[in-house]
Every structure is written in C-alpha cells, then in structure tokens.
Length: 52
Image 1 (cartoon, rainbow, N blue to C red):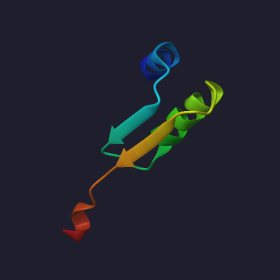
Image 2 (cartoon, one colour):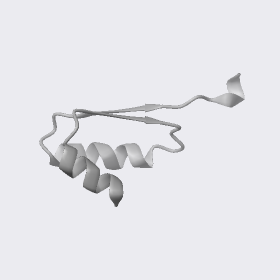
Image 3 (cartoon, rainbow, N blue to C red):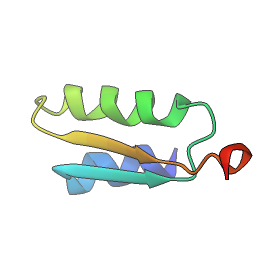
C-alpha cells in the first residue's frame, strides 16, 4: 500500500527493484506506471546463487 502511494505521488520514470523473487511486485509496479500514462519503466535485478 505504501509503494502504491509513493508511486502515485512521485510518478517516477524508472523503478529499479533488487532481489526479485518471482516478479509479482514488478508486474504491480508496471501496472501502476501504465495507469499513470505508460511512460515509465520497471527493471528487476536478481542474482541466481545456484549458478555461482
């Protein structure tokens, strides 16, 4: 809920999320940015430790 409020108030052009588990929040952030006009981007960064 807090992230929704922040995104709505700030209207960022870019959201970067680190530590992506399954990507659910990325979809949520992208949907919110789309509702704000579709000009934003969402980037998820995660490290696969099983391949290290």
